[in-house]
Amino acid sequence: MENIVKNIELIVLDVDGTLTDGSIYIDNNGIETKAFNVKDGFAIVNARKMGINFAIITGRTSLVVEKRARELGIKDLYQGIHNKIEKLDELLAKYNIDYSQCAYMGDDINDISAMEKVAFVGVPADGVEEVKNYAHFISTKNGGKGAVREFIDYILKNQGLDIKILDMHKSN
Image (cartoon, rainbow, N blue to C red):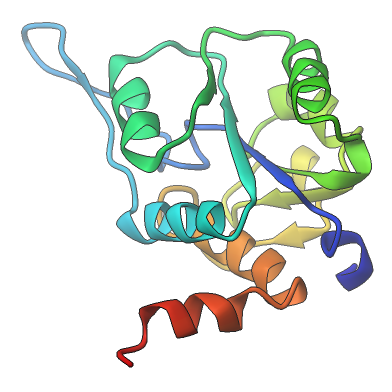
């Protein structure tokens, strides 16, 4: 597995159940909120600084997700998508890479089509069993509770980029 992740240039993430715990809060005014893990976000920002691209492909549409993607510098955000492969193919063409350079993390059966194609698949600890059958990496953390951070850290460590990130944050 370590050799496979050395080539990863693009990490694609699902949202509900992966970047979040899958809960959707809707108040009396119809305003939707979600909770995102700050450690997941920190890992995304650091990995982007190391040259790894990120994308979000999700079946739902939410202004909260749009705002979070903007905060993290994720420009490739696709919401309301039911054919994830079509968007994944567009992303690969955009970055001039192939599936062997792509990782994907998701938690439910609507992620399987993408998982069947990419080189490296991650699943949160509380992902559904059918999806875990496709996983190369099963996080010890649940979705929205640091699973994405753990997945990214594994990739960065195996690319030797974890040391660069540590150095970047040390005082000189």
